Image (tube, rainbow, N blue to C red; front, side, top):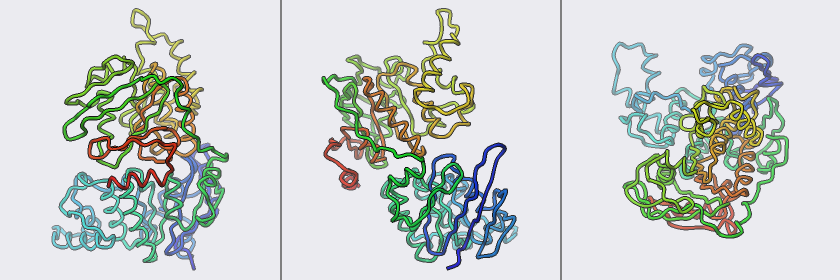
Length: 496
């Protein structure tokens, strides 16, 4: 069967960086092909070349077997190639109906909007994905899963034959991922081609017919999904065999480091009680809306609580006070590192210094640059942060290295308890392994960690205990030694 789109011998460089080198890839009707690779492997560049956004330095794009020497975005759309980027490319201030019918209304060149036609177009578009969404609802008020469906429906309106999904499940719950996969299965059955780009290897193996692996701009592996185990994919992506890892050994003498008693915040969580031992990683998970994210913010003083107590090393910490939490030795690594954890335009040095600024100053308040540089250099080496220099702007680093800078910021501030909220979201597999190894190393030195995550393999490889949250309450404590992925997934499914 002739491919809808085929890329042959594609190479592309930006300045002195070779983003792609002699890469070939084809998409056939009714096929789901996954494209995987670490950050910087060339996935985004290849997507943009297929969409006509970038022009390759060499190689050819074929549409229905016809070579296109200079494929442009409009030409790709006419051929049925649609890309759904991570931001969905929707207008947040417009309604669902307006987003879906916008292009049709613009092309009609009418002076006035035909609102009856707008609703008809939107209704027909959503029917193609088998879901109903309030047409009058603003896109800004939709869930991530609903935005994803609107973006797919919009692509199908324009006679899409190939849909490229860039990290489509990053912010979805397990139930929403299952719903998305049903939509993908339906599209596959209708003969559409799907290019599924993701870091989540379990999902890749579940949904794909074929898999293509990129590393450092080259295609290093390709074949049927059934040929690849998770370890195989990791090896091809990183060029090394990576051990899954086991939770750090249980602390010797039980010593309570952190205590939470009867913590309550109206409409978020209630009567939360738990302890963290010195040198322990305590996992917390739950479905979207379980209260886990709000709990993370409250523990660090970012959100007010109505009642309860928090103690670190036997000392009460004033609720709702971030400064006191930091001084006491608490640290918080947020899920959205760019917006909440870093100053992206600033240097690695400045980002690492900010949490413990006072420790780098003399008695007159002047910074001691030698001590600051030595500390930053130590943590850059210890965390394996890949960057030309301490003065490199954080926004120029990969996602994995940015996350390591967030960790370094708190470690330089003499942290005792680290609250991690989705610590490896959007981080490629190699950097993820590095972050996990560093967490284990810190715990062995006596640090306490609260790991809040919906990444089940991450919880199982790092934690010895996991607390399940549902509707704002801790409903169960599980011991990871007696669990595997399927058992933990089953426990979560019971909460739905």
